Figure 1 (cartoon, rainbow, N blue to C red):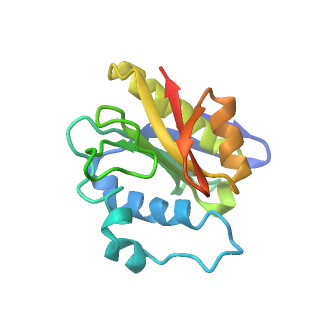
Figure 2 (spheres, one colour):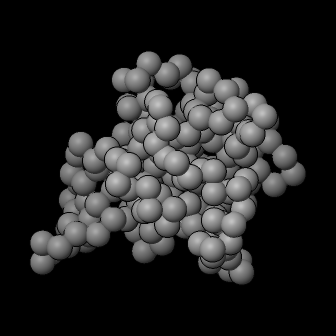
Length: 176
């Protein structure tokens, strides 16, 4: 998809996610839930044991679901996965945290902790939104914890609007 370089950081490139990336999406789901390093944190085992949480990756990709992966290129030529963004559809009887409607997919986005603040999240989000437009989607949603000001600010800056939520998180929608 694209490659980004800067003098102070190794480069990274973006590519479409495939079914082979499902395991990595699980790792990124864990990173998304553990965004605040001061919290006790989830474990991968805890996520897998909770169907309300694990549904964000279980069986991905189902029909119509897509994603984007960020891969770093180190100076020695080796690579490492550093982030992912993907969408899933959830039925009304089994909604996700950012559920709006069964025909509006919900985004999950996460960046490896040591790659946060380098523009990878914005690049992943924009690539995923491009995929959504190309797929003919008209809206896409997400849930973001209010305490995660960096993520909420990114989504607001990229045109997402708050349409609901609960005591700790906002549900946001972007019209494509």
